[in-house]
Length: 173
Image 1: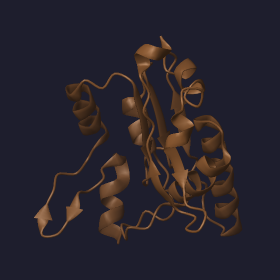
Image 2: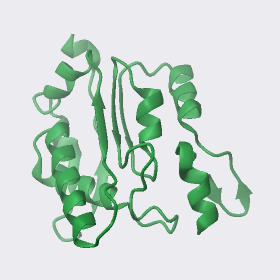
Image 3: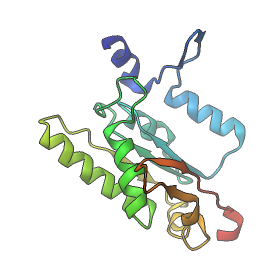
Image 4: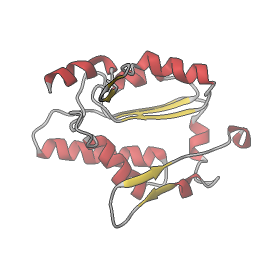
């Protein structure tokens, strides 16, 4: 609905779980939650409309932020029906299944989304990936330390059921 679209502009993701009225998640709110929890090393994926707002706020040397769209762009499929965005679907279904790194998965998803948007005559969503200077060498080594085994897809179901990357920053420093 148009009300849902208004919430998403500026990166506000509404908390919808009827009958509960939850607080919307904002880029600054997420940053505060992560900072307060003490998470120094972060890999964050935001598959929502106007998700680039999260990249703008969360970007730092210790963070990888992947956003389904630029700050001023919609990511098609974010109407709030529970379906993944074009980008979320492409990243988890194709990107991680075919890519051997986070960067490769992002590139695969970005290219697939661009082709899908062009086929349908839609405006480009322009997915965003920002990799902090200090975390960049660490993500190159995730597969070496077994994180690749934590990325699982079901061949029968073409949907990513679980994505979990666990790494110990101390092992990499």
